[in-house]
Image (tube, rainbow, N blue to C red):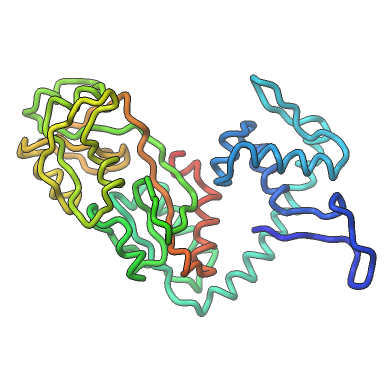
Length: 317
């Protein structure tokens, strides 16, 4: 939610830049007061750390005093910042409630929100969906599973309004919203595989077993991240069969036809006696992102993105 509040009315003197108040600055201050960390604040608001600093400085300039003490080791509120926070929270909550009420009326006749997901739509994410439905009872949600091999097709074909997909996303037509569930990657291996007795694996050891890949039409850049063809040091990784769905991949792993990289939430949900999940060091963390098509950024999509962004801690960020 971003709006500008100005003092003078129509026909009055135009305010100076320091006389305008950006809601985004207040939102940034509220999140920073919770996190006490500029990097995590930027991630929650999906802006850069530099943008967080810029917003806080602008707010402090409007007020005329420091609200935050920052050093290389810690961030804390000043005494004025604490007082400002106490006064701001109820006022901001009332403002958000007013906007939510208006948005609920606007969403009432806009049809269902179609949500696609890859892997697992469980844990905290479904709690966010239920809270969204409670807040906007006129907006029904419909959940659709997306094939592993086609993370973005349903968005391009207008079959879903928004989707939770594994990163990265480099589609020019798509918008990446909140990013969450940053977790170490795990390797799925048959209980008969030599890796099954390990407690941890190094990424360079991927060169020692065929890796189950992802079939087309998933884009090449995305398939390479989910099933790399080389280790971080450059050693070739043997390529196993390519699959279209997660269940196909797990079945091949169980049959000892190859090993497969998975995100942590998927390993927690898919417990199998014939498959072992081992954490892998030396690879970038996996992450999920909420994505929608830039040409169809409807009110209900933005409202849902706001709901997800407001509860990233529950989603395991």
